[in-house]
Image (cartoon, rainbow, N blue to C red; front, side, top):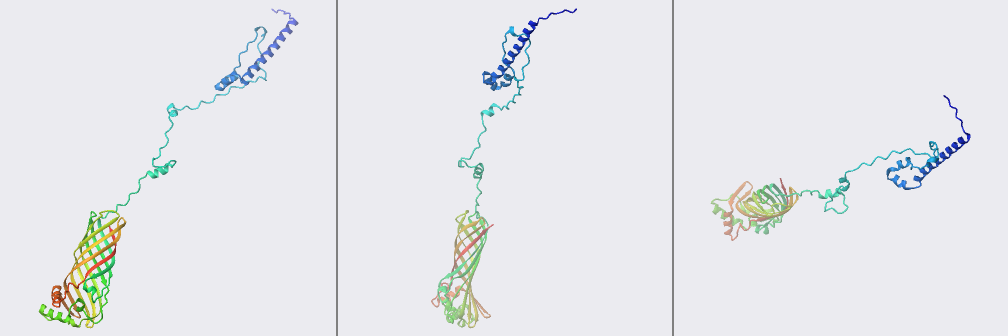
Length: 365
């Protein structure tokens, strides 16, 4: 069934006026709701604490008079644009409370390093210093000395006019615990002599050649094959040599310095060569020498030292050997000394005692 509704033109115009007024009211309220947060109201502080998106999207509730609302409010106009919600920033990664409360300890610097020094410098300072060489003295030992040789007594100060000459010495042995050296030692040296030409060889020793020849004939029980009175000298050369075991005692068993004294017993040879009118003649005196030595040195390397050494050679002569041309005569020094006493002289008092001084180079293995 269709019912005919009669419409009243006056009521229709009233309803349409109410609808337009309501739409304007709703639009104005929406604009106010958007502007209040932007003007710094209470919701701004609330939005700064992390709720800005909710405040921008949800507007404040609006109280509308019930009598004036006649229809469903229209959608907001283009002027009231609502911003879409923004995603919240991801929370910062949290650290353990213990890590935040206790910061990492600062690196330590050695107390001996000055303030502000770099760690590398302190590490270098704390490193152990290189060990110094110990300069041990024990072990296989050898030394070489080069210096001068001189002599004492009547033969040196008399007609020979002896002047010091060249000397070389050596030692080969071992050191025991730094205190004792024991080994073989030896040396050779020469001295210059200035003899007055025409002087008899025996006169240089304080002997009368004629009386000595008679005395030797009586003491030796036989005639001599050498004419001692014919041995007139034009030139002379003196040599000496020693060799034998040696013992040294050190005062400093280890360290940079060394000092020692030593002694021993050695074979001793004193040789005098003469150029005479009857030909070359040679007199050799054989005996023993007791060296008394003292030395001081400095270690320049763990196995090498240098220093100086002084020796005094106390000598005792046993045999004399005289050679002239093809003839030779060997006589104990004791017999020659007895013949010299018959002339109020002493042969042993004339024979030389030696001294040496030289620079030392010592090596240890």
